[in-house]
Amino acid sequence: MNEAILTRAAAIVNANTMHGGAENPVCVLTQIDLDGAPTAATITPAMADGLRWIAFCSGRMSNWAKRGEK
Image 1 (spheres, helix red, strand yellow):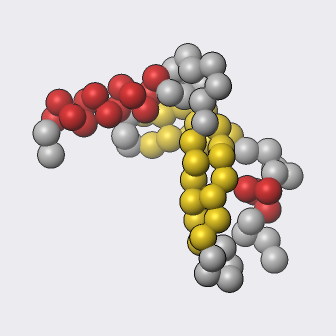
Image 2 (cartoon, rainbow, N blue to C red; image 1 turned 90 degrees about the vertical axis):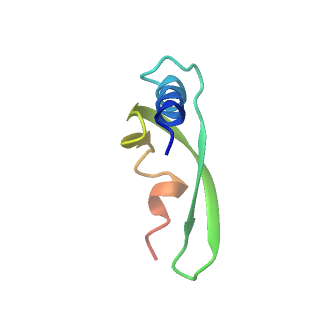
Image 3 (cartoon, helix red, strand yellow; image 1 turned 180 degrees about the vertical axis):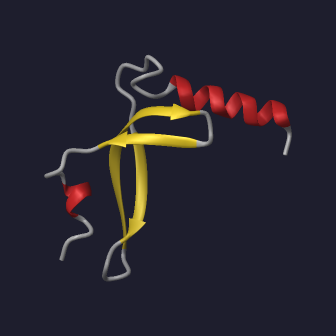
């Protein structure tokens, strides 16, 4: 893949995290629940190392955190 595109994408990801200075960063993550249905939730991107990893914040009692329980 084009290195310039990857570098620019990593810069965009880093800039759109709390650690990167974004005021109200939001991502939408989607997963498949235990019944096989897709669900989506907004979650805060806390920090990132380019495209290698992104850390997200979610409260322990949030709906996102409880989705794996049943």
